[in-house]
Length: 506
Image 1 (tube, one colour):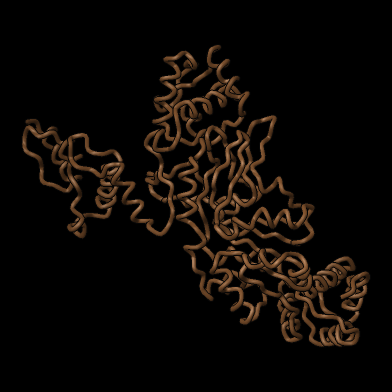
Image 2 (cartoon, one colour):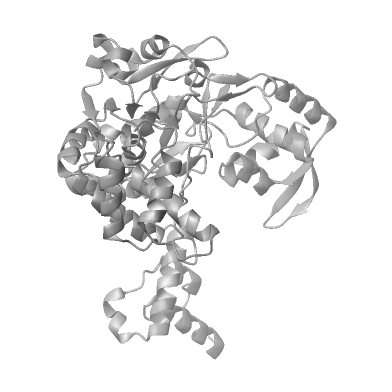
């Protein structure tokens, strides 16, 4: 054996953390089958430690071609599930059947994408439908055999640029006549129901500390927090009522923050050939996973799912019955999910309840069953009715008296009714000082005494939580207009009150 051969074997063995292999043993086999000895890391230079760690990661990712045991994909999935036992994590599917899809469904998405784009590399098609490239590549090969697509050229990383043939274009047009959607492959209804159950609000039990963190930017007394706490913990309906301007909407918007920070939802749901788009950038805030920070990202996340901030969806006087049903765009054939489906695992706020364009009884009758049984029925365009989760905290916010709006049967299904009362004078003064600091307005106690005595006590005007913010904003804007430093003075507050309360009773 030559010196060079021995040196190569010895070098490879040292990198693997073992003695030099005997003659006749393939050094690459020895390296691939070996595991670095970390218990002797203290005797190894830092450079070699980093190299050994890298080799170990490559071994885990690439597997052992010599037959040495390595964690299987199924085992990796089990480990990921165990590691994240308290957190739902969608794992990348290993086959179309595991993804709840048929080859025809994926074929239709790929062909409609090629019809719209003209040509695309195989990896671009896989990224468009958000499925593993290995699955899409096999499907594209089969489509090529059927003369639906052809190779226009080569692409990097052993890939090809695909283009529709005349036969493929004809079939793609037929697919597009039914539905023009060619985005992310849909998730099955069964998988979506399982995800809602795993991330349900009923599994979350916010504590007093969670509520204080959620409402840290609002001035709420302990008594109100003690009433809100059990209502939020229940995950059921909640009625907030009281005079306008006391923060009912602000409270409702922050309730979701008391629960977990994020949830996973599918971009689209597939039900019997109908595609329902669920992810809505208008109502959902995407929260991408942080980078792993390594050379190779070992996460195998199903890209058909998107991680979002736990949703808070607010519907006011513009709410109509059509927003509570699956809506079909007749020109594109794409269905849009109703508001309550988009709000699953979060909060749905019906603001200004009683002022909707639809009759109140119609809205209440629509939700009597979902509020009590926590599931809903949706009508699909194809005439089928499906059962879906209704897992959300519904908050009705109104300035009107609840008993004048709804009957006893409906109020019974909303176990918590909380009145948001006017602030006390002490709370009002404290809020004025806090708001002045936030808005950068110099606080003046004497000017506040003048405001309370002249404009609240003498005319009998009630305090409102929104008044400090609204009045101080007027003071700040007045000062900016005149090029003066923003500060509280009795004169500035008098002007703000004159304008603000010009046509208001309170």
